[in-house]
Length: 302
Image 1 (cartoon, rainbow, N blue to C red):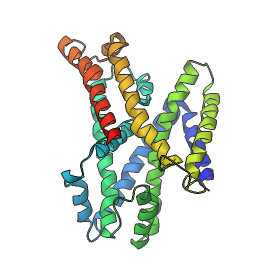
Image 2 (image 1 turned 135 degrees about the horizontal axis):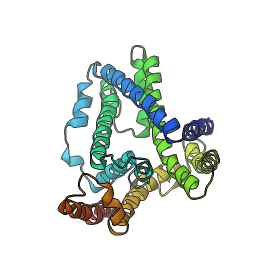
Image 3 (image 1 turned 135 degrees about the vertical axis):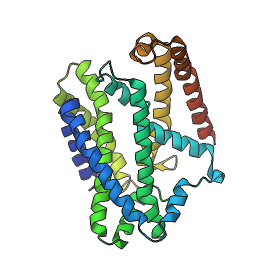
Image 4 (image 1 turned 180 degrees about the horizontal axis):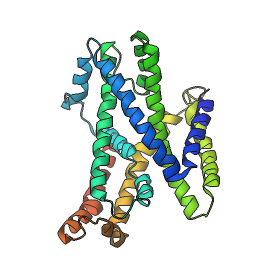
């Protein structure tokens, strides 16, 4: 069943990407993202109306510095890198389609702000209901697929809210998967001169081969573990906690020290301010890689 769902989802992703940036991805985002926002608002209001829900709000926003550790910081960094697709090439790929008059710094600000807002909304969507019904807030993936259905079964019109909740997950997963697939599609179309439908088909075949073991790790391969992790958990760790941060470091170094002459000229808003350009180069080429590398090494050691 998990593999069938995986095949269906990949087919849906391929269908969207096959229509290109404007006909597929942009149109999909214009429809699905507002729909996702509406769904999340409905679930947040419903959860906050439950008795005891405020404990979930306190759990989300009240700092507890005793919980801080380098591992937690590494996990948070992996989540941020995954959320913003930093180190994966998504921003570079989409940036190739941006008009030269676009203010990149302003666009970056709005991307970060809106992503942070959605992350907070996701927490408010899950945690208040979680505490209201006495569920474990640290259940991990089970929080989504085990705990949340149990909560919905206790809510009035719970079946409706369960459908809305999982629609939110599908929308979020679809928009993320589409952006990741477009990286390889763009490269294959521009460099290998393949047609977009052929490039999509080739990528989907490879994705299916790689994703089947991950899908089965929740079933027949649940007891197969490497370094104490299932195939899915290991893939998640390697990509989010290692691959993306390392990719981010490499991207920063290439941007600041290899392709700088082409990169900084795209910043039309600060091109006339040499001092700001030099500061940005130091931040991108020295500060950011050093900070990410320090967190990465410390998190792995601890």
